[in-house]
Length: 196
Image (cartoon, rainbow, N blue to C red):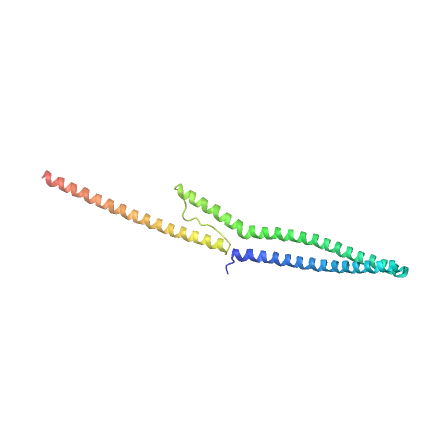
């Protein structure tokens, strides 16, 4: 089965996209929790103001304790989210390195190797020292592999054409030699007839 370069890239980008959506969702959930704590803090402040105005010291102490608990939970959530984000940034960096490695190994390097090999073949042919039996090797079955197969097919046809040209050229040389030999004999015969 042929593996498409486009499919490889789309799969890798899709994985990264899903991961980024997950990150955004989890961060939004954490921010929603922090907002909830902030809303409770606002409500606690309003109750605290009322307790101060009424002079209820028991309620003031209870509200201070509630306030401290809410601040602690909010800070814990913010700290956890920050740590989570740092871990996710590290994972994204690792994924980007993996994606870069996979793209280089499966797309860029095979294309580069085929290009360098083809340039060498063309240069040798241009310098009249080309080897038409030389082929470009590839293990890839994607578009790069298809391109290499096409080039190798072209080289097969070119090699076959050159063999036919060599055979026809050899036949032509034999025919020329045969005609030259017959002309030489005709000239000798004509000289013998004119000498007689």
